[in-house]
Image 1 (cartoon, rainbow, N blue to C red):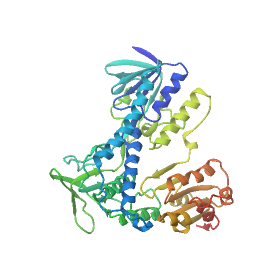
Image 2: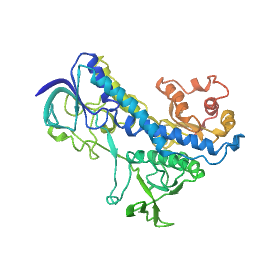
Image 3: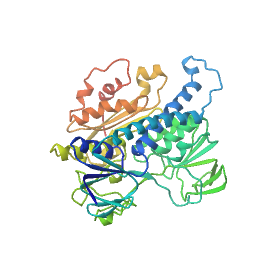
Image 4: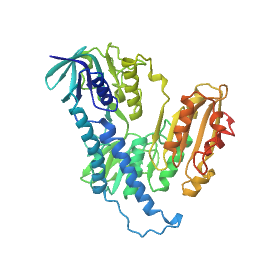
Length: 456
């Protein structure tokens, strides 16, 4: 049985830099990965989907030149095989570079296989037992497959990225981030798209006005929606002929298509870890229970990334690494509760989100003020011909601190960082309100929005 300074299970955005951190301290690491180096983000998440978003944007530009005075001959088509090849090349370059760096590091032993616990500090991989005083679980998550679709040839976010032909009619179950991004991508590629959502609106965690605005944006591109869907199930009639029963209160009870994408959430990859052998606590959803420093109930065992339920994004996973690395190696006391939640929905135009929604702020009982401006109010958005969306912000009326913000519109995924920086600096909103922004930019709408706050 070989003993290491650390065992890292999973090569996602927290596990990989942690392996190199240990190695930089000349400490020996067992680095375990059962599939591809780089985890979800690199292989089936951020990198491939944003490559597809870029290709979809090119199709949109090719089909919408007239409004800006550009006459583009008809006939532009999406070649999904070439789009996939470009995506695969981007992934391969990153994975190859990562594999090379890991392979040449003399302090890192790579184990390709599935890991499970045998004891509190003992892990089995490929029938070999290894031990370490510190063990880090970074096993990520996978698409949830709901009941009723067991006998259907469905796709998840992984399989849809392997298509070489554009679906004639793509049916998507799930009206949240993954479903909406793929919906717009394939609509722009040329598919008929229907998105089915069991809730009464899209992305229920957002404020209603955000949900409704996003639905309007996507409906203008020709995407069909069925909300309030109940008793969902699927039937495979033949290859290329799938029916989803929606049992809605009105409209057709069934929707038929050629391809089906399930995008109804994620589940942690903890079911094969045999965590009970180590005495590690999981919650009722299978996530590893951790404290503010990401340590489990077993001293010396940590859970990072999607599997701990404390964030579901690449940036939160990497922040998990930063918290653990600085606490262990630099004597700091960083906590996961110190970070401000931020994320984006990468439709076009994108949504950037930081902190609380308006609904969350109201429920907290805080004395709040809100600001709101339409994107059509800013000159740069009009000049670009992209005036969909709006900005909104929530302010603590007593402390003048920003509690949260949403930017839905051109550049929203980048613009939100300016607001987020003020929040991290713990400065009053007046700092950015009184700032001088470059003209003409979309960001200059932020000070304008903050000049006319309304009590809520």
